[in-house]
Length: 225
Image (cartoon, rainbow, N blue to C red):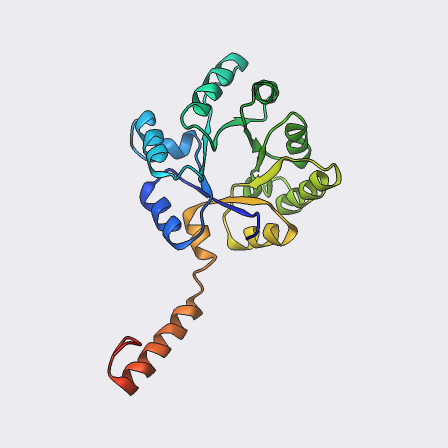
């Protein structure tokens, strides 16, 4: 099997469960806004995700504090939620980049987030971030966001970086398609975009046609008599 990782960008358990049933899902990303949308206390929303995910599935939880000491306190707490595969998400502010360096020194794996340029992403990788969450669709508001992320893919490869791109902020299947084609190692997709990648209407038309022809000929809806 390939090394590509499909991550679902939501804290809604019903949506996660649906994607997990249909697709091969490697984990879940959240952020403060996503957590608030659950309508649950933050601690409960996070605990529900911890309880649902398999040990091999990854959980990414974003820090809320914006100062170095606060970020580090929250990062250590997030890392303690599960024995493995749990990553604090840290925005690439000056304080955040400093915290990413410190987390690397302490052996805490991190996801650098709120990235709007390939250069910022590369510097986060250089500081030791394990994953890099580029905000693809938002980057498109400032230029060619997809191309900037493709540049990052090339930069990481040229410098033999071990950090992984985990492209985020998608609004269309086309954006995801272009980055997969370019070699993105991981994408975090909203449930609707993830499911739209396998939701071509022609597939259902074909299935309905097969079923109708079978029932007309044999009077039943199954292969087995």
